[in-house]
Image 1 (tube, rainbow, N blue to C red):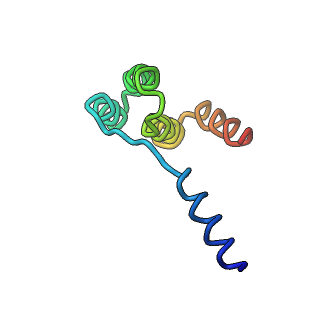
Image 2: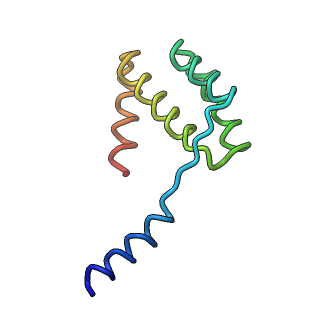
Length: 90
């Protein structure tokens, strides 16, 4: 009986786990801007995409890419400190 209860619980909980990713033209444009280290351009595109498609989880992922690239590739100390503050709040 316990196995059946766990199985039913697992089945019902698995339906709520979903994600929405749409790699459209704007997301691709922001990714290209990030790879070219054009952080301001990428931020503008991602901001527009966040308002137009609020459930697209790639926006969140690429914003994290931007934080990483600012902190580690550009070697800006202020960006690294800001990233540390953001991570401490999580």
